[in-house]
Amino acid sequence: MNNTINLAVLGLGTVGTGVLNLIKDNINELTRRSGHQLVVTHAGTRRHRDDIDPSIHQTADLMAIAEAEDVDIVIEVIGGTDVAYEVITHAIRHKKHVVTANKALLAKHGNEIFRLAEEHGVQVRYEAAVAGGIPIIKIVREALAANKIDWLTGIINGTGNFIMTEMQQKNRKFGEVLAEAQALGYAEADPTFDVEGIDAAHKLSLLASIAFGIPVQFDKVYCEGITKISLQDVIYAKELGYTIKHLGFAIRREHGIELRVHPALIPSQALLANVNGVKNAVMIDAHPLGQSLYYGDGAGAGATASAVVADVMDLIYVIDAATPSDVPHLAFIPEELSDIGILPSDEMTSGFYLRLTVKDEVGVLADTTRILSDNGINIDAILQRDAHKSGLVPIIILTLPVLEKQMNTAISQIEALGAVVEPVVRIRLESLE
Image (cartoon, rainbow, N blue to C red; front, top):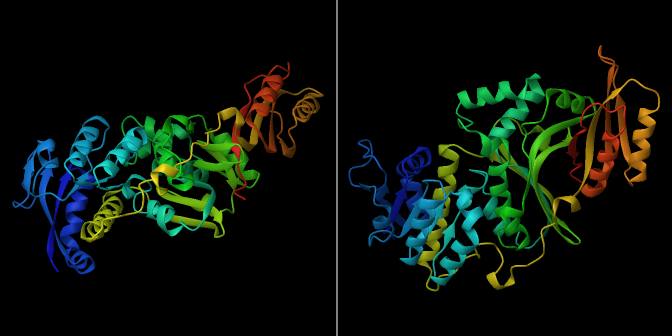
């Protein structure tokens, strides 16, 4: 009892400071749960912090920390992919277990990092890399291990969800809400990773790997942001009983797997449609369990530190074991990872919301429905609004699920009609059934 586990925290930003505070505040609980005393021996920082416990050795030499004798677990929360990659691989080669919150790094180099860890007999834990304080990695890797997962979807970027919530609930325009998100600290000065879906795609690639037993394949995720979502479409969707959310989807199909991040109309009564603000949520459909939903804070010092220290606690049990073993990094034993293909975008299947802007002429709706029918696309609903003062008429069409390539062909033919004066707006539609 009370053997010491020595920790190094690399990065003393919001998350790193949150980790130090959590360990300090909850040290009695952590000791009672683990049977060990957690001691932070090193902190990697470019600037000395006077408010940090003086017993913690502060240094900018991350490589020295990664190989220090008095470090059992390295916690990487510096972010980025270059320095983080070098220090994590260095730590692994020096037989250190690693905890990281770095989804971008794992999306890019995860396969290599996990393989290296297996070769050196250590573990890399990454609960905090996806959905912050929601223990979704543990749920998929362990709690659902008896299930075959058919699909998962989720709101896995709080910034995008905040923007879509404000547009939906308060009829605000995208640019206005983005500026507020930046002022509140939800969005960076350069918000590209959030609003273009890249951050969500990083996380989705990790979730898909542990759900389906495939290598991490971030480069094959179809990615579409929310910058082109207009308030007009948010309002029309609401009239039709739908809410627009920015979602990630990982779906097992007969001939491959769909990995996609994009805005989608979902039924307004669906649980996911009512996850608002900066909250995250992941819905999983599995056999035999059925559907389940996991909800909570996706970012912030407290939520992320909670996930980081939970990983530390799990690693203590690995360190303690007479014959160390743990759940495989990607949930399936490495030699059993599948090479099932990731479907290209034109092979994806979904319903669609289409908005046409047309001249107020007889026959344009008939021509449009004929084109859809000729391409094997079934219509679920049509909403035709009154003509604008300009004489242009908005027509909104909802379709049943169809292959993307069929919709691509149909839209090209619709846009070629003389009465269609603007490019067709399309947003995918999902029933979540």
